[in-house]
Length: 291
Image (cartoon, rainbow, N blue to C red):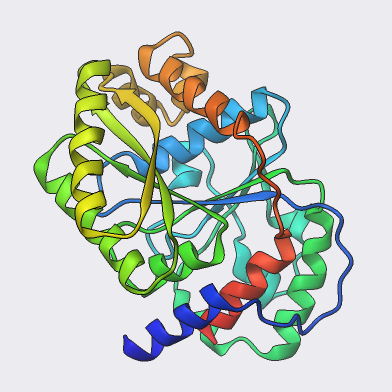
């Protein structure tokens, strides 16, 4: 863990020189979405906020980084035949692997077995980076990390320019979200994060929960938090999952759908944001960490 932490620190502090010279004009916003524990609605948020952004005429790619436990494809009602490893280790193109979902949202399934990345050769990595050039028109990459706190989650957070953590008002969820931020702060991976409070009864509970959480973080950590908003506790979400149809498609008028649309609007309204990354650079960083 210590060796990995040192790699994370170096990557967070120094931009590594690219091993492959590529020209890419597209510089999407790359956002990691994480949670301190499972079951807080992280993947549902990723899928639905991506649809909301796509409906706003933004070009979105979801990368399911929850290796071995990814379920974004299930939530979208897909059973992918291929995944990212078929591009890296096989002979598939990006176009053959990427799934196009509602309103044109793209999904790059993560597959299973993150340890496979460690065995990828330099040539395979460089070939994969070159193949990514076909995704140059993507404006947003939403990276759905695994739940909890481990090397993989911290690595993905390090690779992304923006970081969103999702929690609920439950004390256990807040404790685990704090532990995640504590790890991010300890390894100096990020100095700011955005927060979403899920499954709230009303707007007051969302604001109260964030304010209490923010107070503790301000007292003990060196991370600046931004409140992105709340998502209502909505029974329609359960039915949408059972139907394998995203909430914004199955129940577009539900309160939770309205809340997610509000958050999507807030994301697009962030001023003075200039992305310095490309799709290729994201995966270069991922490969550097897991090599």
